[in-house]
Image 1: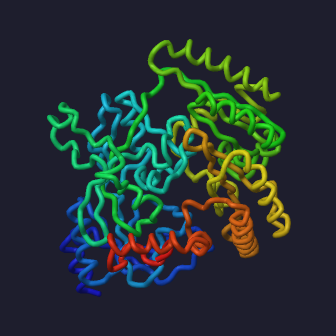
Image 2: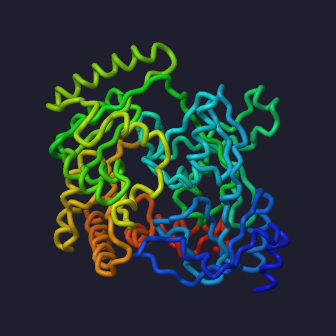
Image 3: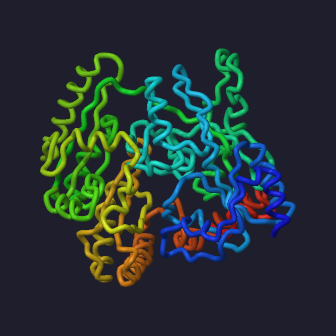
Length: 488
């Protein structure tokens, strides 16, 4: 053990090797994931060369590695070692924004760059990056994109990895690789002037290599650099709220908006989810939940750079007409929720405490992909399972996010519980397992298979499992990167 620590200290420096007994305690809040043994060390590399040396050393010593780039709390168990003697590779210190290019609307980032760090720097250049719903302030942008967390702006999402572009990857065998047009790293200003910029995601050749590390939970390679496509920061914007008594009442309206690519932000939430977003404590959440409508569609409109106010006004009239056709009303405020308050929240990362944990201090998540027309059926299934498990249905936060230009949707159920209560913890875990199996049987597509979902997904498709294992053998032949996750 001392020899391992000494070698790691040679690579990253003695101050960047941590062997505190508590280093494994912050790596999951997911009660369905059972820890193996605490990691041996946590190392904090600063450069891609150090990352590559760590991976090569791991292959020499057959030491498992678990890459981590976001800060705590970790909710899904993917950063928790599944085997003993693992080393946590903490990439949070690699937090340089290497380049922001206004002309190509591109940002070059290291994995430790967070949304709260990136957005203010982009705004200085008149840019923004489309964000998921209220990410944690210390959430790595690259990790979020690799995990395919859905952005609030389906109209800008041309594929499920949008806005991720080129990557620099250290594979599990120690090879350093550039996906897409990543060989144009932008290290020289003359490259940018000649148009040699890493804006292409797929490739090189006919393979989309960046997909091999997407939703892989760090089990294929370690991403040390990425280019991210940005959008122009709007001069003027407005946010509208469309209340509904049932989710089904808002589905037709949402489809109409998607048909015309309306809505720079567009998603649906129930009263509990919206209350958790707006409230800062448990009492406020309960009060808000009782005053909000059962369902709300959130629609954002931006004006761009040319005649922004006129554009927003014209788009507002179009959306108002579509709402009326669906028997709905476009509003700028609801009881307990005003456009300005919600808009200020949605444009930034979540304040502390993280919004999913504000109600009771703990939360379990169930999320998957489907289509909008099936969302109401999944809600009914979830509520039926909650009733049978004696979980309070009114506590369930529901978030429905159209993705990929509206061809699908992300369905998410948030199950708050008191982590200090054994009874609540056990009940929530039982509901999580029961509902996950019911929803999977109802054709919910768990495209990001954390924890118990991995056995469900890969157990139902042996061919995909076999191919995935072959890819693992190629890029990580010794199976050292986050072993025990997915089908490994």
